[in-house]
Amino acid sequence: MSLTWIEINKKNILHNIRQFKNLAPNSEFWPVVKSNAYGHGSKEIVSFLKDNEDVAGFMVANLEEALEIKSLTKKPIIVLSYFDRDNIDLLKKVDSQISLPIYDLDTVDYLQALNKDILVNVKIDTGTTRLGFKVADVAEAVKYIESQKNLNIFSIFTHYAESESENQDFTKEQLEIFEKVTENYKKYKLHSACSAASIALPEAQGEIIRIGLAFYGLWPSEPTKRRAWMSQVCLQPLMTWKTKVIQVKELKKDDTIGYNRSYKCDKPCKVVVLPIGYNEGYDRLLSNNAEVLIKGERCPVRGNICMNLTMVEIPNDLEVEVGEVVTLLGTDSGQNISADDLATKCQTINYEIVTRINPNLSRLIV
Image 1 (cartoon, one colour):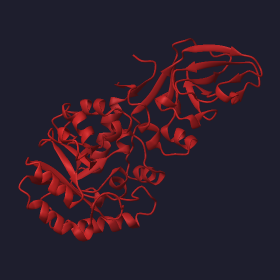
Image 2 (image 1 turned 180 degrees about the vertical axis):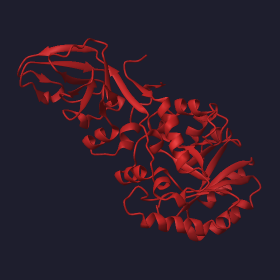
Image 3 (image 1 turned 30 degrees about the vertical axis):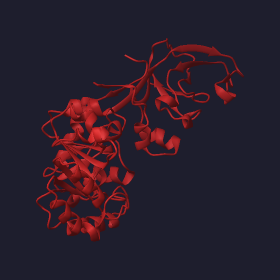
Image 4 (image 1 turned 120 degrees about the horizontal axis):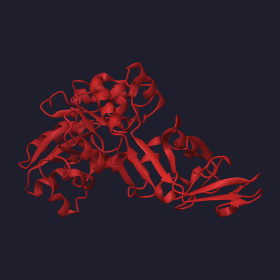
């Protein structure tokens, strides 16, 4: 095993699925495994869930991601965002297991010209102002797609702009628009609910719930977390991020640590060096600004985080040897460091903390 790795808790995977199945018993559960399953390992997650009866299919951002997991499961795969029209070799690999997004008529003509049967998902822009047909153009677009010999609509969907917010007025407006514009298309799968919307607006759950961040036991926002508690939805984080000590050294008072000598010891101390840095996804903003867990002790990062190395001060009386396991994110002996904790220190969101973890690090289902 490598010196730095990710552990994914299989009991928590199954627990979180049950929570959402209880929340939306009449909806199909489709985990979103885009961006390497939000940093958790798409191949590992899909392989673990390939035969799970509660999982109806998987969702990804692009065609490359769909093809990466295609051989791991027989379940259908929805591409939510885009595909490269110039990459004909990839498009030739599309079959009935994969459905592609459509949000303009030019793409309709392009796919039809490939002269092969293709399933498509029609994206409607109800107010997020990203990808999608304008509401006024939906009827004409669907009619045109339905007239194509080689294209078959698998689903019609939209995306909410602020379903994770305290105020749900705009989300309700979007839902009302979506329901009105799709009222004549009930023969297709209709879906709009992401993690936050599934919790905030049960009426938005529809045939499919697209569960992304919350599936991994992370909350899209504090309002979503509060609503979940009120709905008795309790999620468990899947990820623990670990590394190992590669050197232990004793320093004197006034010794400095790391590039730019950004930390100066105010007393004699012990420091350990970790094989982790911003290349691995441990953000440089955590320099002199974070803690790791060693034998249940919270130990502060000292000095600037390097590309591949981080230095951490440990208590003088803590016995640590080379090879000691260190927890960067997760729980150790009752102490916890969450993605939200790191996000706050990095002035970002928990999504970014986990998705930016280097995909080359080992992911283990444990």
